[in-house]
Length: 252
Image 1 (cartoon, rainbow, N blue to C red):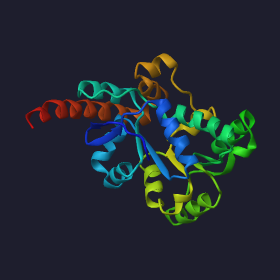
Image 2: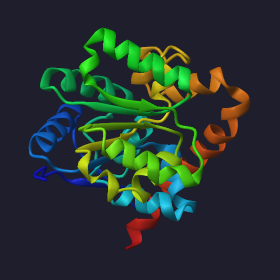
Image 3: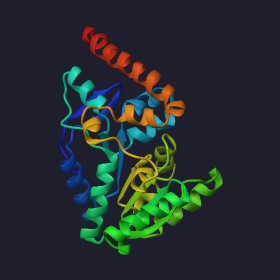
């Protein structure tokens, strides 16, 4: 894949320094040239998870594109002296890829979330564009022994694009464990809780909060009981490790 870009090392993960529009171009060209591309977007929380999850670490490392989906990574890259061009938000990328699929007669498989949620997402995009973009869909609840069958079903759906909307690290690990079977699908990415937002189940932070890196705080306000540990402890650990990388590595 011919995307010459510098990579930015944040806590040992090499993030591609590509803008939003460059990412779209790489994906579009990749599908046109029948490549197999896996994209992973990382934020502060995922970089912390990688520290203690070897499978996730490998799943992210083998990705063809690693995007920074978090304003905190853009700040960290500036502090570390190798600034990223911009944040590439997974949900925005997904929306633009659905439009791209419609314009180029690509088909998409939507995998993840609860049954009613994924159905709403498919309905919404079908109304917005056309039913022709849908190669198939299913919810994200399955047992380990169903995994191979699901991957085969996705592979045989003739989809060029796969969106996996399951929480980390399960979405990354699903794509990693089934990468051989999913080779036919030109482009694959994990989109986390994006289906919930598209379906209207959860609300996304206002634009001013997104631009100021406060999207995590908005999510925290929506679900404080579930999110406090992830954000308060995770964010503090992230800040500590970034400073450690900056000032610890100056000796080497």
